Image (cartoon, rainbow, N blue to C red; front, side):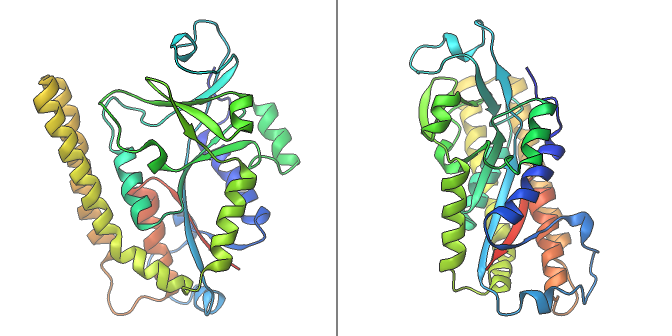
Length: 292
């Protein structure tokens, strides 16, 4: 059963809670709330002298699987029981999303998938009112999954017991992986912010400077996938899908240069706007600037 709410609704409710629940100051960088190229947006004074980290979240919706003919339940090699939740790592047969997130995590280690352990409107409303959306979600580093082993869709699945143990399974062939619940996730992030001695805007500048490196890294991963298609499958339809993914990455590189092009020395508001544009439109994540 598909989630009754949208990815935007889930992401908004989770972002709102995370900004409050980790005892941190947080600037969620929504592109629509930052005016392009506008100086003097107030961030220079607000962030001056602050140290912190960058947090990237890629929101996923979870399907609720309750039927005895659910795809994963019949595959041997796991301990899941009905009902369970699952979310897709890639929504297309060939997608550059995982390559992008792996590359982004390489330059910003606090990059995660976030997915709900609920699926109805009643549940999200209840969790919203009790500030429990974050606690009823799971968090997964892209590197936990790693490079996708083939060109097929892959899924992360967990039931109530697995979630409580910080575990899930990665399919199509079940592989046990680690996930974070809110307490461990929040503590890990909060500790990193507290331990950080790097000025936040220096970290923003460093990340902006390495986005091209990340996109080039993702492009190389897709080159390797293309070689796999050519060598192992040799189906024209598969080659076309991989070539389309490569083309999308090439266009992302062009768009990156357009976003980062700036006259003079951009102030904090402009640099945050640039990060918002790149992270959301090119990497598909919601970005936070987190600081104490």
